[in-house]
Amino acid sequence: MALSLGDFQENINKGYGPEHVLQEADKRISHLINFEANALYLVDQEKSDFDLSVCNENHLKTFIKKEVDHMIEQGYFAWAIREKRGVLVSSRNHSRKFVLHVIGTYSRIRGMFIGLLPEKNSTIPDTSLTLLSIILLNTANALESLEFYSLLRNQNEILEEMVEERTQKLAKYERQLQQVLKIQAIGTLAGGIAHDFNNILFPIVGYTELTMDEVSEDSVAHKNLEEILKAAHRATELVKQILAFSRQSGQERKPVKVQYI
Image (tube, rainbow, N blue to C red; front, side, top):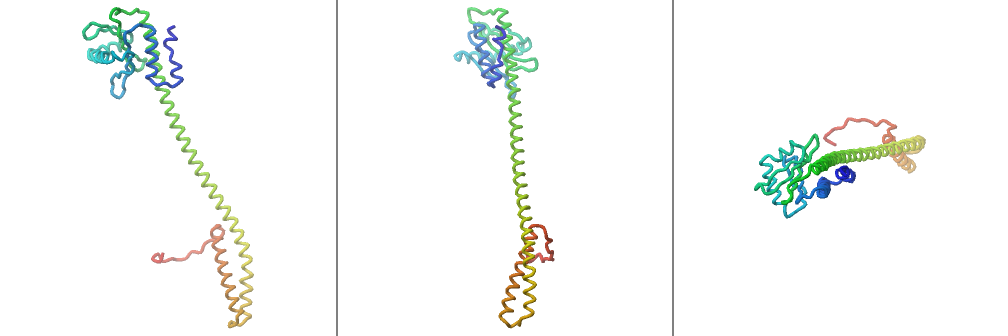
């Protein structure tokens, strides 16, 4: 029975939040001890204070909050933390009895349980207090495990984001590499075509120049040959540009006046 009352593994596995664990603890405590009202406080690490998280009787919430403020001022919370067990304390007017029990592990205080005993029955058996201690210790362990799981999930999310970012970068670099290889392939093809075209142009230029020497400069044939030679020279320049693009031919370097650029 004690193990079933204190086992929160299902809550941890399902990734429930702290409030769900406290609500489950409240149900188990209510099943065990007939308190008039139960309240579970969690420690706010940033404010170093106790915040009310669960109260099973809303009409007594304001009353419990005022009593808790009084208990903190009187040092009852500090006493319960030192004792690490259930302790009985009186209300401000000494008319009611409360059970205080710290919710904590061996390394850290997680919160505080406050149970309001019925007016007509202000005692609680030792066995019930022992079982209450078991439930609250397991509650503290569950809260700690949830925090660790949350940190682990956050680290996993960060790692997944880093992997995704690296994957995208690798994909980008791969696309860039493919583009470079494509350009290199085009350059190689263009260089081969340019060499073949240059071999075709060579006899055209040579025979045109030889033929121009054999005809009169005033003749129509000579003018036609001049146009053929001009076109051949333009084609030769185009071949040079293609070879430069394919990096198979060194570009001619000339001094340039900067003011003209």
